[in-house]
Amino acid sequence: MALRAQTSPRALTYSMVVAGVRVLAVVQAVILPFISPLDLRVAAGLVAYCVVAAFIAVPFSETPADSSAVFSSPRFWIVTVLDVAAAAAVGWYSGFSLLIVVAALDAAALPLVGAVIVLLVAAIAYGLADGLAHVDSDLVQIAGMNLLFASTAYAGAGFGLHAVRKAERQMRAINRVLEAGSDMGMKLALPEVLAQLVNMLKQFQESVPWQTVVVYIASYDPVAKEDLLRAEALAGANGDFYRGAMLHFGEGVVGHAAMEQRPIIVADLQKEPREVLVPKPKAAHGFMAVPIVSEGQTIGCVSFIALRTSAYTFEQQKLVDRLIRLASVGIQNARLHEKTVELAETDSMTGLLTNRAYQERLEAEFRKAQAGRQSLSLLILDVDYFKRINDTYGHPQGDELLRQLGDVLRQHARKADICCRYGGDEFTIVMPETIKAEAAMVAGRIRQAIESATFTLDGNAANVTISIGVAGYPQDVSQKVALVAAADKALYAAKHAGRNNIQMASPSQVMAREPELRKPF
Image (cartoon, one colour):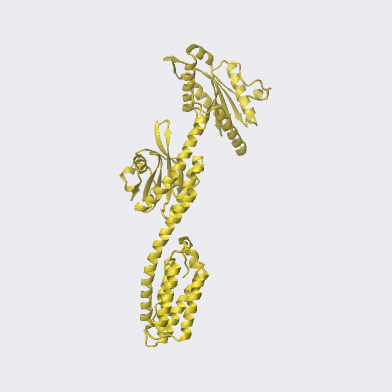
Protein backbone atom coordinates (compact mmCIF):
# COMPACT_ATOMS: atom_id res chain seq x y z
CA MET A 1 0.00 0.00 0.00
CA ALA A 2 1.12 3.52 -0.82
CA LEU A 3 0.64 5.25 2.48
CA ARG A 4 2.69 5.37 5.66
CA ALA A 5 1.67 7.38 8.71
CA GLN A 6 4.03 10.04 9.99
CA THR A 7 4.08 8.79 13.53
CA SER A 8 6.63 7.16 15.77
CA PRO A 9 8.44 4.07 14.42
CA ARG A 10 6.51 1.82 16.80
CA ALA A 11 3.09 3.00 15.56
CA LEU A 12 0.95 0.64 13.46
CA THR A 13 0.67 2.47 10.14
CA TYR A 14 -1.95 2.02 7.45
CA SER A 15 0.65 0.69 5.02
CA MET A 16 1.61 -1.96 7.57
CA VAL A 17 -2.03 -3.01 7.88
CA VAL A 18 -2.37 -3.27 4.11
CA ALA A 19 0.90 -5.23 3.89
CA GLY A 20 -0.43 -7.63 6.54
CA VAL A 21 -3.71 -8.10 4.67
CA ARG A 22 -1.75 -8.67 1.46
CA VAL A 23 0.31 -11.43 3.15
CA LEU A 24 -2.82 -13.08 4.57
CA ALA A 25 -4.54 -12.92 1.17
CA VAL A 26 -1.52 -14.57 -0.49
CA VAL A 27 -1.42 -17.26 2.23
CA GLN A 28 -5.13 -17.92 1.66
CA ALA A 29 -4.66 -18.18 -2.11
CA VAL A 30 -1.67 -20.53 -1.77
CA ILE A 31 -2.59 -22.70 1.21
CA LEU A 32 -6.36 -22.46 1.49
CA PRO A 33 -7.72 -21.84 -2.01
CA PHE A 34 -11.51 -21.60 -2.26
CA ILE A 35 -11.74 -23.41 -5.63
CA SER A 36 -8.55 -24.99 -7.00
CA PRO A 37 -4.93 -24.99 -5.72
CA LEU A 38 -2.17 -22.92 -7.36
CA ASP A 39 0.91 -24.49 -8.90
CA LEU A 40 4.33 -23.78 -7.42
CA ARG A 41 5.36 -21.16 -9.99
CA VAL A 42 2.26 -19.01 -9.36
CA ALA A 43 2.77 -19.33 -5.61
CA ALA A 44 6.38 -18.19 -5.94
CA GLY A 45 5.24 -15.26 -8.06
CA LEU A 46 2.77 -14.22 -5.36
CA VAL A 47 5.51 -14.25 -2.72
CA ALA A 48 7.72 -12.10 -4.97
CA TYR A 49 4.76 -9.78 -5.54
CA CYS A 50 4.36 -9.31 -1.74
CA VAL A 51 8.00 -8.34 -1.33
CA VAL A 52 8.08 -5.94 -4.32
CA ALA A 53 4.78 -4.25 -3.36
CA ALA A 54 5.95 -3.72 0.23
CA PHE A 55 9.29 -2.30 -0.96
CA ILE A 56 7.62 0.17 -3.33
CA ALA A 57 5.01 1.28 -0.78
CA VAL A 58 7.53 2.20 1.97
CA PRO A 59 8.49 5.73 0.79
CA PHE A 60 4.98 7.12 0.80
CA SER A 61 3.86 9.54 3.48
CA GLU A 62 0.42 9.35 5.00
CA THR A 63 -0.79 12.91 5.32
CA PRO A 64 -4.14 14.37 4.28
CA ALA A 65 -2.47 17.20 2.44
CA ASP A 66 -0.72 14.67 0.23
CA SER A 67 -3.90 12.98 -1.05
CA SER A 68 -3.73 14.59 -4.47
CA ALA A 69 0.00 13.88 -4.72
CA VAL A 70 -0.51 10.23 -3.80
CA PHE A 71 -3.29 9.93 -6.38
CA SER A 72 -0.97 11.09 -9.15
CA SER A 73 2.16 9.28 -7.89
CA PRO A 74 3.60 6.64 -10.27
CA ARG A 75 4.68 4.49 -7.33
CA PHE A 76 1.17 4.36 -5.95
CA TRP A 77 -0.23 3.24 -9.27
CA ILE A 78 2.48 0.62 -9.65
CA VAL A 79 1.45 -0.89 -6.32
CA THR A 80 -2.23 -0.65 -7.22
CA VAL A 81 -1.66 -2.29 -10.61
CA LEU A 82 0.33 -5.07 -8.92
CA ASP A 83 -2.52 -5.67 -6.44
CA VAL A 84 -5.16 -5.77 -9.19
CA ALA A 85 -2.95 -7.97 -11.40
CA ALA A 86 -2.29 -10.39 -8.53
CA ALA A 87 -6.00 -10.68 -7.78
CA ALA A 88 -6.75 -11.26 -11.48
CA ALA A 89 -3.96 -13.87 -11.77
CA VAL A 90 -5.28 -15.82 -8.81
CA GLY A 91 -8.77 -15.56 -10.28
CA TRP A 92 -7.46 -17.06 -13.54
CA TYR A 93 -5.55 -19.93 -11.93
CA SER A 94 -7.62 -20.62 -8.85
CA GLY A 95 -10.80 -18.59 -8.72
CA PHE A 96 -12.03 -16.28 -5.98
CA SER A 97 -9.51 -15.03 -3.34
CA LEU A 98 -9.14 -12.35 -0.68
CA LEU A 99 -6.71 -10.39 -2.86
CA ILE A 100 -9.65 -8.31 -4.06
CA VAL A 101 -9.70 -6.81 -0.54
CA VAL A 102 -6.15 -5.47 -1.03
CA ALA A 103 -7.29 -3.50 -4.08
CA ALA A 104 -10.15 -2.14 -1.98
CA LEU A 105 -7.68 -0.97 0.68
CA ASP A 106 -5.68 0.77 -2.06
CA ALA A 107 -8.86 2.53 -3.14
CA ALA A 108 -9.59 3.62 0.45
CA ALA A 109 -6.44 5.77 0.41
CA LEU A 110 -7.72 7.75 -2.58
CA PRO A 111 -10.30 10.48 -3.06
CA LEU A 112 -13.76 9.19 -3.97
CA VAL A 113 -13.37 9.44 -7.76
CA GLY A 114 -10.07 7.57 -7.75
CA ALA A 115 -11.50 4.97 -5.38
CA VAL A 116 -14.44 4.25 -7.68
CA ILE A 117 -12.09 3.86 -10.65
CA VAL A 118 -9.84 1.41 -8.79
CA LEU A 119 -12.80 -0.64 -7.51
CA LEU A 120 -14.40 -0.87 -10.97
CA VAL A 121 -11.13 -1.83 -12.68
CA ALA A 122 -10.35 -4.45 -10.01
CA ALA A 123 -13.84 -6.00 -10.20
CA ILE A 124 -13.85 -6.11 -13.99
CA ALA A 125 -10.30 -7.48 -14.23
CA TYR A 126 -11.00 -10.14 -11.62
CA GLY A 127 -14.34 -11.04 -13.22
CA LEU A 128 -12.83 -11.35 -16.69
CA ALA A 129 -9.95 -13.50 -15.45
CA ASP A 130 -12.22 -15.82 -13.47
CA GLY A 131 -14.87 -15.94 -16.19
CA LEU A 132 -12.50 -16.61 -19.07
CA ALA A 133 -10.64 -19.30 -17.14
CA HIS A 134 -13.88 -20.96 -16.10
CA VAL A 135 -16.22 -20.75 -19.09
CA ASP A 136 -19.21 -21.85 -17.08
CA SER A 137 -18.94 -18.74 -14.88
CA ASP A 138 -21.20 -15.72 -15.19
CA LEU A 139 -18.93 -12.70 -15.84
CA VAL A 140 -21.49 -10.13 -14.72
CA GLN A 141 -22.25 -12.04 -11.54
CA ILE A 142 -18.59 -12.54 -10.68
CA ALA A 143 -17.73 -8.88 -11.36
CA GLY A 144 -20.77 -7.75 -9.40
CA MET A 145 -19.93 -9.94 -6.42
CA ASN A 146 -16.32 -8.78 -6.50
CA LEU A 147 -17.40 -5.14 -6.68
CA LEU A 148 -19.81 -5.60 -3.77
CA PHE A 149 -17.20 -7.43 -1.70
CA ALA A 150 -14.51 -4.87 -2.52
CA SER A 151 -16.87 -1.95 -1.85
CA THR A 152 -17.61 -3.33 1.60
CA ALA A 153 -13.91 -3.56 2.37
CA TYR A 154 -13.37 -0.09 0.90
CA ALA A 155 -16.18 1.42 2.98
CA GLY A 156 -14.76 0.04 6.21
CA ALA A 157 -11.17 1.01 5.47
CA GLY A 158 -12.16 4.35 3.98
CA PHE A 159 -14.25 5.32 7.01
CA GLY A 160 -11.45 4.45 9.41
CA LEU A 161 -8.83 6.21 7.31
CA HIS A 162 -11.02 9.30 6.96
CA ALA A 163 -11.33 9.53 10.75
CA VAL A 164 -7.56 9.19 11.14
CA ARG A 165 -6.94 11.86 8.51
CA LYS A 166 -9.42 14.22 10.13
CA ALA A 167 -7.67 13.81 13.47
CA GLU A 168 -4.28 14.33 11.82
CA ARG A 169 -5.51 17.47 10.07
CA GLN A 170 -6.65 18.88 13.39
CA MET A 171 -3.38 17.94 15.07
CA ARG A 172 -1.34 19.50 12.27
CA ALA A 173 -3.48 22.64 12.41
CA ILE A 174 -2.93 22.85 16.17
CA ASN A 175 0.81 22.24 15.73
CA ARG A 176 1.01 24.98 13.09
CA VAL A 177 -0.86 27.31 15.41
CA LEU A 178 1.46 26.51 18.30
CA GLU A 179 4.50 27.06 16.11
CA ALA A 180 3.15 30.33 14.72
CA GLY A 181 1.95 31.46 18.14
CA SER A 182 5.18 30.65 19.95
CA ASP A 183 6.63 34.06 19.03
CA MET A 184 3.34 35.98 18.99
CA GLY A 185 4.02 37.29 22.48
CA MET A 186 7.34 38.70 21.24
CA LYS A 187 5.67 41.04 18.74
CA LEU A 188 5.08 44.51 20.14
CA ALA A 189 2.96 46.14 17.44
CA LEU A 190 -0.74 45.27 17.65
CA PRO A 191 -1.23 45.28 13.83
CA GLU A 192 1.55 42.68 13.53
CA VAL A 193 -0.04 40.48 16.20
CA LEU A 194 -3.47 40.71 14.56
CA ALA A 195 -2.01 39.99 11.11
CA GLN A 196 -0.36 36.87 12.51
CA LEU A 197 -3.63 35.84 14.20
CA VAL A 198 -5.49 36.12 10.88
CA ASN A 199 -2.75 34.08 9.21
CA MET A 200 -3.13 31.41 11.90
CA LEU A 201 -6.89 31.36 11.34
CA LYS A 202 -6.26 30.81 7.63
CA GLN A 203 -4.11 27.80 8.46
CA PHE A 204 -6.91 26.60 10.74
CA GLN A 205 -9.44 26.85 7.90
CA GLU A 206 -9.14 23.17 7.07
CA SER A 207 -10.59 22.28 10.46
CA VAL A 208 -12.81 25.35 10.94
CA PRO A 209 -13.92 26.64 7.50
CA TRP A 210 -14.97 30.28 7.14
CA GLN A 211 -15.71 32.71 4.33
CA THR A 212 -15.08 35.83 6.40
CA VAL A 213 -13.26 36.40 9.68
CA VAL A 214 -13.30 39.66 11.64
CA VAL A 215 -11.11 40.43 14.66
CA TYR A 216 -12.59 43.08 16.95
CA ILE A 217 -10.44 44.82 19.56
CA ALA A 218 -11.89 46.70 22.55
CA SER A 219 -10.74 50.30 22.93
CA TYR A 220 -12.03 53.37 24.73
CA ASP A 221 -13.96 55.85 22.61
CA PRO A 222 -13.75 59.42 23.98
CA VAL A 223 -16.91 60.48 22.13
CA ALA A 224 -19.08 57.58 23.31
CA LYS A 225 -17.18 57.64 26.64
CA GLU A 226 -17.13 53.83 26.76
CA ASP A 227 -15.23 50.86 25.40
CA LEU A 228 -16.25 49.88 21.88
CA LEU A 229 -15.40 46.82 19.78
CA ARG A 230 -13.65 47.95 16.59
CA ALA A 231 -12.94 45.75 13.56
CA GLU A 232 -9.14 45.92 13.44
CA ALA A 233 -8.29 42.90 11.24
CA LEU A 234 -10.31 41.26 8.47
CA ALA A 235 -10.00 38.54 5.87
CA GLY A 236 -12.26 36.75 3.44
CA ALA A 237 -15.03 37.43 0.96
CA ASN A 238 -16.90 40.16 2.88
CA GLY A 239 -13.94 41.74 4.64
CA ASP A 240 -14.60 45.19 3.18
CA PHE A 241 -18.18 45.12 4.48
CA TYR A 242 -16.94 45.01 8.06
CA ARG A 243 -14.04 47.45 7.62
CA GLY A 244 -14.30 50.20 10.22
CA ALA A 245 -17.25 48.49 11.98
CA MET A 246 -17.85 49.37 15.63
CA LEU A 247 -20.08 47.58 18.14
CA HIS A 248 -21.11 48.30 21.70
CA PHE A 249 -20.73 45.60 24.31
CA GLY A 250 -24.02 43.71 24.26
CA GLU A 251 -24.80 44.73 20.67
CA GLY A 252 -25.33 41.84 18.28
CA VAL A 253 -23.92 38.37 18.70
CA VAL A 254 -20.35 39.69 18.87
CA GLY A 255 -21.29 42.23 21.54
CA HIS A 256 -23.08 39.55 23.59
CA ALA A 257 -20.15 37.13 23.32
CA ALA A 258 -17.77 39.90 24.44
CA MET A 259 -20.00 41.03 27.29
CA GLU A 260 -20.77 37.50 28.55
CA GLN A 261 -17.21 36.24 27.88
CA ARG A 262 -18.44 33.04 26.25
CA PRO A 263 -18.41 31.73 22.67
CA ILE A 264 -21.72 31.85 20.78
CA ILE A 265 -22.69 29.73 17.76
CA VAL A 266 -25.59 30.86 15.57
CA ALA A 267 -27.18 28.55 12.98
CA ASP A 268 -28.41 31.39 10.72
CA LEU A 269 -27.32 34.98 11.25
CA GLN A 270 -30.19 36.28 9.11
CA LYS A 271 -32.74 34.85 11.58
CA GLU A 272 -30.89 35.77 14.77
CA PRO A 273 -32.96 38.21 16.95
CA ARG A 274 -29.81 39.83 18.41
CA GLU A 275 -28.69 40.81 14.90
CA VAL A 276 -31.86 42.65 13.81
CA LEU A 277 -30.28 46.11 14.06
CA VAL A 278 -26.74 45.11 13.10
CA PRO A 279 -25.76 45.53 9.39
CA LYS A 280 -24.62 42.26 7.80
CA PRO A 281 -24.10 40.80 4.32
CA LYS A 282 -27.10 38.95 2.89
CA ALA A 283 -24.89 35.93 2.19
CA ALA A 284 -23.84 35.59 5.85
CA HIS A 285 -25.55 32.64 7.53
CA GLY A 286 -23.47 30.33 9.74
CA PHE A 287 -21.82 32.38 12.50
CA MET A 288 -19.55 31.89 15.48
CA ALA A 289 -18.21 34.53 17.88
CA VAL A 290 -15.35 33.75 20.27
CA PRO A 291 -14.32 36.42 22.82
CA ILE A 292 -10.69 37.30 23.49
CA VAL A 293 -10.29 37.35 27.26
CA SER A 294 -7.13 38.17 29.21
CA GLU A 295 -6.93 38.18 33.01
CA GLY A 296 -10.72 38.22 33.30
CA GLN A 297 -11.11 41.23 30.97
CA THR A 298 -12.58 41.10 27.46
CA ILE A 299 -10.05 42.67 25.12
CA GLY A 300 -11.72 41.69 21.86
CA CYS A 301 -13.75 39.15 19.93
CA VAL A 302 -13.31 37.06 16.76
CA SER A 303 -16.26 36.34 14.48
CA PHE A 304 -16.39 33.55 11.90
CA ILE A 305 -18.91 33.81 9.06
CA ALA A 306 -19.95 31.05 6.65
CA LEU A 307 -22.23 31.01 3.62
CA ARG A 308 -24.19 27.93 4.70
CA THR A 309 -26.40 27.60 7.77
CA SER A 310 -25.41 25.51 10.81
CA ALA A 311 -21.79 25.71 9.68
CA TYR A 312 -20.15 25.44 13.10
CA THR A 313 -20.13 22.77 15.80
CA PHE A 314 -19.21 22.66 19.45
CA GLU A 315 -16.03 20.73 18.61
CA GLN A 316 -14.93 23.45 16.19
CA GLN A 317 -15.72 26.09 18.77
CA LYS A 318 -13.45 24.33 21.29
CA LEU A 319 -10.61 24.20 18.75
CA VAL A 320 -10.94 27.92 17.97
CA ASP A 321 -11.21 28.76 21.66
CA ARG A 322 -7.79 27.16 22.27
CA LEU A 323 -6.28 29.25 19.50
CA ILE A 324 -7.86 32.46 20.77
CA ARG A 325 -6.62 31.79 24.30
CA LEU A 326 -3.11 31.46 22.90
CA ALA A 327 -3.46 34.63 20.84
CA SER A 328 -4.88 36.62 23.77
CA VAL A 329 -1.44 36.70 25.41
CA GLY A 330 0.18 38.32 22.38
CA ILE A 331 -2.72 40.73 21.89
CA GLN A 332 -2.66 41.84 25.52
CA ASN A 333 1.13 42.30 25.43
CA ALA A 334 0.80 44.42 22.29
CA ARG A 335 -1.97 46.50 23.90
CA LEU A 336 0.14 47.09 26.99
CA HIS A 337 3.09 48.08 24.82
CA GLU A 338 0.91 50.51 22.86
CA LYS A 339 -0.37 51.95 26.13
CA THR A 340 3.18 52.39 27.41
CA VAL A 341 4.24 54.10 24.19
CA GLU A 342 1.11 56.26 24.30
CA LEU A 343 1.86 57.35 27.85
CA ALA A 344 5.46 58.13 26.88
CA GLU A 345 4.32 60.14 23.85
CA THR A 346 1.35 61.89 25.46
CA ASP A 347 1.59 65.12 27.38
CA SER A 348 0.06 64.43 30.79
CA MET A 349 -1.42 67.92 31.04
CA THR A 350 -3.13 68.35 27.67
CA GLY A 351 -3.46 64.81 26.40
CA LEU A 352 -1.76 65.84 23.15
CA LEU A 353 1.49 64.44 21.78
CA THR A 354 4.71 65.56 23.41
CA ASN A 355 7.37 67.62 21.67
CA ARG A 356 9.49 64.50 21.13
CA ALA A 357 6.58 62.64 19.54
CA TYR A 358 5.83 65.71 17.43
CA GLN A 359 9.37 65.74 16.05
CA GLU A 360 9.12 62.03 15.14
CA ARG A 361 5.69 62.38 13.49
CA LEU A 362 6.72 65.50 11.56
CA GLU A 363 9.82 63.70 10.28
CA ALA A 364 7.78 60.67 9.21
CA GLU A 365 5.05 62.72 7.54
CA PHE A 366 7.58 64.92 5.75
CA ARG A 367 9.34 61.87 4.33
CA LYS A 368 5.99 60.46 3.24
CA ALA A 369 5.04 63.74 1.58
CA GLN A 370 8.36 63.87 -0.26
CA ALA A 371 8.12 60.26 -1.43
CA GLY A 372 4.50 60.59 -2.56
CA ARG A 373 4.79 64.12 -3.93
CA GLN A 374 2.04 65.24 -1.55
CA SER A 375 1.35 68.41 0.37
CA LEU A 376 2.05 68.84 4.08
CA SER A 377 1.06 71.81 6.22
CA LEU A 378 2.10 72.87 9.70
CA LEU A 379 0.34 75.12 12.20
CA ILE A 380 2.11 76.66 15.19
CA LEU A 381 -0.30 78.13 17.76
CA ASP A 382 0.48 80.34 20.74
CA VAL A 383 -1.80 81.60 23.55
CA ASP A 384 -2.01 85.39 23.57
CA TYR A 385 -0.84 87.04 26.79
CA PHE A 386 -0.47 83.71 28.58
CA LYS A 387 1.79 85.37 31.19
CA ARG A 388 -1.14 87.53 32.27
CA ILE A 389 -3.19 84.36 32.83
CA ASN A 390 -0.52 82.98 35.15
CA ASP A 391 -0.13 86.30 36.95
CA THR A 392 -3.90 86.69 37.40
CA TYR A 393 -4.98 83.15 38.26
CA GLY A 394 -1.72 81.46 39.23
CA HIS A 395 0.32 78.80 37.51
CA PRO A 396 -1.96 75.87 38.48
CA GLN A 397 -4.86 77.59 36.73
CA GLY A 398 -2.57 78.34 33.79
CA ASP A 399 -2.01 74.60 33.54
CA GLU A 400 -5.78 74.07 33.70
CA LEU A 401 -6.22 76.48 30.79
CA LEU A 402 -3.71 74.48 28.73
CA ARG A 403 -5.66 71.29 29.51
CA GLN A 404 -8.91 72.89 28.32
CA LEU A 405 -7.18 74.23 25.21
CA GLY A 406 -6.02 70.71 24.42
CA ASP A 407 -9.65 69.54 24.48
CA VAL A 408 -10.68 72.33 22.07
CA LEU A 409 -7.88 71.48 19.65
CA ARG A 410 -8.86 67.80 19.59
CA GLN A 411 -12.51 68.67 18.98
CA HIS A 412 -11.92 71.08 16.10
CA ALA A 413 -8.92 69.59 14.35
CA ARG A 414 -9.57 66.98 11.69
CA LYS A 415 -9.23 63.27 12.36
CA ALA A 416 -6.00 62.96 10.34
CA ASP A 417 -4.39 66.02 11.95
CA ILE A 418 -1.65 65.41 14.53
CA CYS A 419 -2.06 67.75 17.51
CA CYS A 420 0.95 68.29 19.77
CA ARG A 421 2.08 70.43 22.66
CA TYR A 422 5.24 72.12 21.46
CA GLY A 423 6.22 73.51 24.85
CA GLY A 424 4.92 76.02 27.37
CA ASP A 425 1.79 77.64 25.90
CA GLU A 426 2.67 76.74 22.33
CA PHE A 427 1.00 74.00 20.25
CA THR A 428 1.59 72.53 16.80
CA ILE A 429 -0.67 70.70 14.36
CA VAL A 430 0.85 68.57 11.62
CA MET A 431 -1.57 68.26 8.69
CA PRO A 432 -0.75 65.46 6.21
CA GLU A 433 -1.92 65.72 2.59
CA THR A 434 -3.12 69.29 3.16
CA ILE A 435 -2.36 72.37 1.10
CA LYS A 436 -1.67 75.65 2.90
CA ALA A 437 -5.03 77.25 1.97
CA GLU A 438 -6.95 74.33 3.44
CA ALA A 439 -4.76 74.41 6.56
CA ALA A 440 -5.56 78.10 6.97
CA MET A 441 -9.29 77.30 6.91
CA VAL A 442 -8.86 74.75 9.70
CA ALA A 443 -6.73 77.26 11.61
CA GLY A 444 -9.53 79.83 11.27
CA ARG A 445 -12.05 77.37 12.67
CA ILE A 446 -9.80 76.63 15.65
CA ARG A 447 -9.11 80.32 16.30
CA GLN A 448 -12.83 81.14 16.27
CA ALA A 449 -13.66 78.18 18.53
CA ILE A 450 -11.13 79.32 21.13
CA GLU A 451 -12.18 82.97 20.88
CA SER A 452 -15.85 82.09 21.43
CA ALA A 453 -15.19 79.51 24.16
CA THR A 454 -15.51 80.35 27.82
CA PHE A 455 -12.82 78.79 29.97
CA THR A 456 -13.31 78.19 33.66
CA LEU A 457 -10.34 79.16 35.80
CA ASP A 458 -10.59 78.98 39.57
CA GLY A 459 -14.37 79.20 39.30
CA ASN A 460 -14.21 82.29 37.11
CA ALA A 461 -15.03 82.58 33.40
CA ALA A 462 -12.11 83.59 31.23
CA ASN A 463 -11.80 84.40 27.55
CA VAL A 464 -8.64 83.54 25.63
CA THR A 465 -7.35 84.16 22.13
CA ILE A 466 -4.57 82.56 20.13
CA SER A 467 -2.27 83.48 17.25
CA ILE A 468 -1.48 80.99 14.52
CA GLY A 469 1.27 80.69 11.92
CA VAL A 470 0.69 78.53 8.82
CA ALA A 471 3.27 77.11 6.40
CA GLY A 472 3.08 74.44 3.72
CA TYR A 473 5.23 72.04 1.77
CA PRO A 474 6.05 72.28 -1.08
CA GLN A 475 4.34 75.65 -1.59
CA ASP A 476 6.67 77.49 0.81
CA VAL A 477 9.69 75.30 1.48
CA SER A 478 11.49 72.15 0.37
CA GLN A 479 12.99 71.01 3.69
CA LYS A 480 11.49 70.02 7.04
CA VAL A 481 13.59 72.48 9.07
CA ALA A 482 12.55 75.27 6.73
CA LEU A 483 8.89 74.29 7.15
CA VAL A 484 9.12 74.71 10.94
CA ALA A 485 10.99 78.00 10.52
CA ALA A 486 8.40 79.33 8.06
CA ALA A 487 5.47 78.49 10.34
CA ASP A 488 7.30 80.05 13.30
CA LYS A 489 7.98 83.25 11.33
CA ALA A 490 4.33 83.38 10.35
CA LEU A 491 3.37 83.06 14.03
CA TYR A 492 5.86 85.86 14.82
CA ALA A 493 4.10 87.98 12.19
CA ALA A 494 0.68 87.18 13.69
CA LYS A 495 1.86 88.41 17.08
CA HIS A 496 3.10 91.66 15.60
CA ALA A 497 -0.12 92.07 13.64
CA GLY A 498 -2.07 92.45 16.87
CA ARG A 499 -2.56 88.82 17.99
CA ASN A 500 -5.79 86.79 17.71
CA ASN A 501 -5.18 86.30 14.01
CA ILE A 502 -3.71 83.92 11.46
CA GLN A 503 -0.70 84.63 9.26
CA MET A 504 0.39 82.42 6.36
CA ALA A 505 4.04 82.08 5.45
CA SER A 506 4.95 84.52 2.68
CA PRO A 507 7.83 84.36 0.19
CA SER A 508 9.52 87.31 1.94
CA GLN A 509 9.38 85.51 5.29
CA VAL A 510 10.71 82.30 3.81
CA MET A 511 13.56 84.02 1.96
CA ALA A 512 14.48 86.27 4.88
CA ARG A 513 17.42 85.41 7.09
CA GLU A 514 16.19 83.21 9.96
CA PRO A 515 16.02 85.02 13.32
CA GLU A 516 16.00 83.17 16.61
CA LEU A 517 12.98 80.87 16.45
CA ARG A 518 11.91 81.48 20.05
CA LYS A 519 9.89 84.64 20.25
CA PRO A 520 10.19 87.37 22.92
CA PHE A 521 6.60 87.16 24.15
